[in-house]
Length: 111
Image (cartoon, rainbow, N blue to C red; front, top):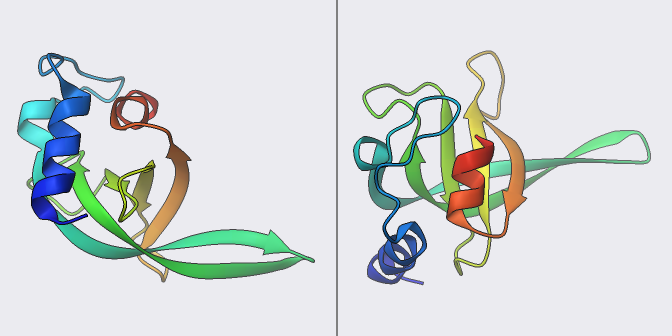
């Protein structure tokens, strides 16, 4: 997907729920950011070892748009899954992956 396609998909999923907030008090209208590509790291454990896999995603929402702290909502490049990531200031990689969801509004609610 390109920038316009992911933006169109996002607007379709938000539909008429622009006034909705979540448990963190995030306002959709204020927290959406122009879609941009970033890299996060999915971490899994296999045979007692932590495996970090880089994943390119679309950044769509920042919990605190004026800062680089808090949760983010991202989408897989094809837009078929939405995920939560959280910045960890004390670790590398910088973005801690929390999980994938089937749609944007579910990720927003689970934030």
